[in-house]
Image (cartoon, rainbow, N blue to C red; front, side, top):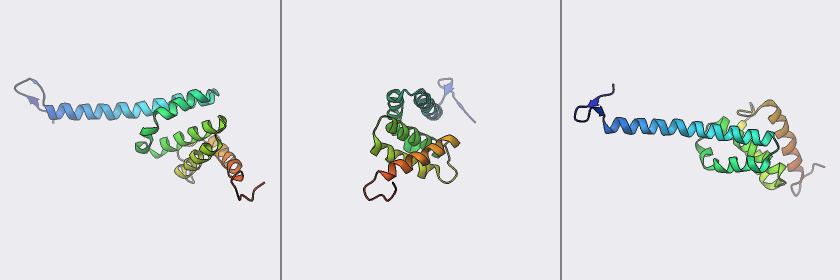
Length: 133
């Protein structure tokens, strides 16, 4: 139950702090979701530099994100790097998307899972010592 501070007629400082923290957390989650949506749209429109800008902007938030958001971010980052010709970076981020998504592909759309498998196989065949053609 929320109590009013009888001296000020308003919420006590601990309640104000709790409300501020709750609001910040809510806005933070909405911000990451919105930024991932912008990155996804930019990637789909082949605006890869723009997608990379959105992805880099939220990179620091990814460790605290949900597994689905982490898999989405790593997939988009990896495929964006791939489209920009940064094959080593692409392999790194796509491998992480594969591990985070797991067998069920959490956070990855069915088409993304197929693209991920094909692209990772291609990039892995380029590694020194690879036996694939």
